[in-house]
Image 1 (cartoon, one colour):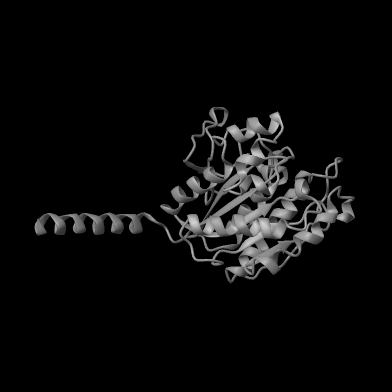
Image 2: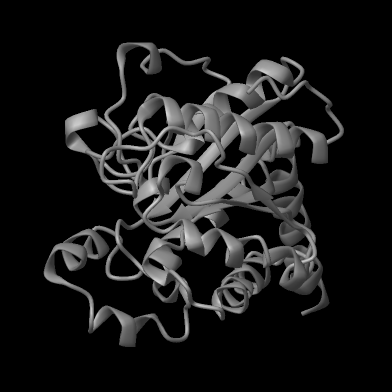
Length: 283
């Protein structure tokens, strides 16, 4: 009996060693979620279709039109959310990161976002009641994540943890929660759940939250930015990314492609500074 037990312990230790060996400490993983601006509303342009292979995306749904399979890493050529979404801040977040990090470091993005959703959709304990009130066009998008976007984000993140190390969380959400003073607390619930479910220490991973289309662009939900700026009071390891000067689409809810590029670069500049790399903010 003792011999069998020792053999079992040996097998477990060997398995753990294999897992740690397969994880690349220089593969930085970033989780991103939110609504349509994180999903990507603007059409990507020719300049957006070439990318350094050090920047990768973990496909979160099956996309036959892109020849991509859920759970597999690919070069981060847009779209980075679902099969037919557009340019997102994560596109130029990742590009700016690899351009300013040592060549041995790779960047991986996991993007699970749903256009039009409230933050409540990512509350793992209460999302079902929100889904029952969601419009049919949103339900179809939610179904692509088997009805539970939060669970898909966590499932993909656990898969990614076998390959690299989670270094940050990016959120762009709030249009559907405009003037909701409880938004920071609701985001904290999601943030705390993510860290707990991924077995990460509380407050150990920085969260970057982007402002909505700014008042200087006539943003339809710009009043929400006042509430978003309060997030660091609720999550100490969180930082707000300004949308000032990021050009808006005619609907004043979404950014243009250039606006997404600028906002994504700003996410990256902040994350690089948190990682100890200082680069000049060019715009």
